Image (cartoon, rainbow, N blue to C red; front, side, top):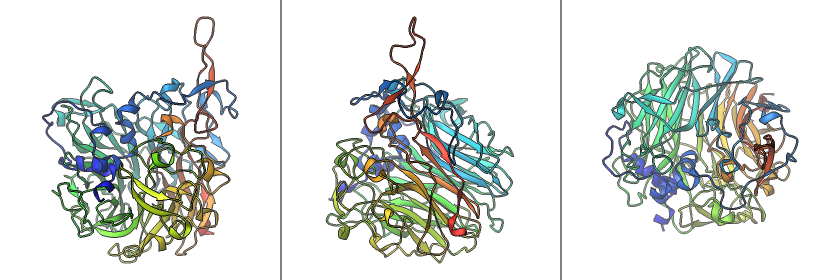
Length: 639
């Protein structure tokens, strides 16, 4: 029973953790692809959406096996302009300012998509914002960056210089990278911007190069507000797999910078991540820089052993019993305390229960060491996609819409995001999604029913019952020593996504932050508008509260976004973020309202000049693109 529950992604994570994160020697093994087939069930469940998609051998060719994309005359809702160049949609501002590349229909998304967002405000100048995202304009994923100098009204793009890095860790002058992503950005107090970028090589059969090395690099924009970055990037953690063993992967890093002027560690840069090791473990590690990102410390273990982790899945425990973790996020309190919150899958369950837990570890010495994990809360992950969406996207969880349609098939998970109140060092809040909550439980027709054979969650009431995902939160009043959710069931925890419509609809992929004056601001994908919950469309909502159980809500999107169609409709990123001043929130999201464009069939041939057509898709009204958008949203709780 417990082994069936092994989160797929967790197993992958475990495999990575086995290798030392600063990874050194090249493994001695025959070349094998580090694809999903080489992961155990837990690792498959836990590996990030970016890597799950990019390392899936079946996705690398991107050929659509059923319901192929069909190029059609441009009959889709009026084209946004030549090659998708239109900038704004009402109050929604396009962040990536490129025009749309025309991509062959069997590679839809490649050369086109942007997804998985992060955003940061300059603490010295609220007009300056930097956003980052997965950017597929060059064909494969890279770390995209855009910046604004006028409070998000207009944006410009930056090219990250990440084609190669110094290759000393592989015994060469250079190491060239095929793909990158899983970005985050942050400012320091001196006006510098930092970009965290995951980089990896695919190995065979995606290319004839067997190299499957992976690494994290940080790039600094030195007084250019994100308009340019230093070259080459500075290594945080690297793994040499030029031999192609495919047995270790560094995954899901996020970064923060200490910007408190009262902290003993002001301007220290922190990066946390998961190492999926060959022994099946998935530990969380951290590294810090005290020289403005020029160099980083050796990896420090975050996810130490604990009595909270009673189920080790029969996998080794070289760094303690909490050996299956993912989705870490670092954040800093005004006194310089470093907090790392993460999802853990080592909790013991009985019967048909399928909950997991959110843990938090603290460092009071600038990231040099961490406390034992503290339980923030339990949570219930999203359901197995294939079970409820007609076999679509097997081995992944997703957010199924209500009813008979099966449009919403993109991979999605619940994860934690925390923040510390800048006006009160003792107050820490952690937000997280949960499929079982005060509005979605046995009394409302939603019951956990164990695990699919992939280790993903099953419930009654997913398509035609009372299940829906909510954004919950757990509060600490003692700097993370304990939380309101430590001993409280998710069915009784408060939710961010309050209101009649949100009690019966799905909310997911939240970002969270505090304003400088102590207002909690959260943004998330929301299906509370129109027919979103039955069509699989989504909107973005910003919710805010100052010490009140009820949140004020503002719709950020000017119209609902259809389910994504790029990457066969299965990949839309993994997370989203929000930044805020005292009066204005800036959610940044991946938007699917722009029609995708293709070469019209039969054109581009002798006597038939090339022409541009739209396309149809099996899960949306038309084939669509993924672009990055933002909006300046008045914080209602401020008024």
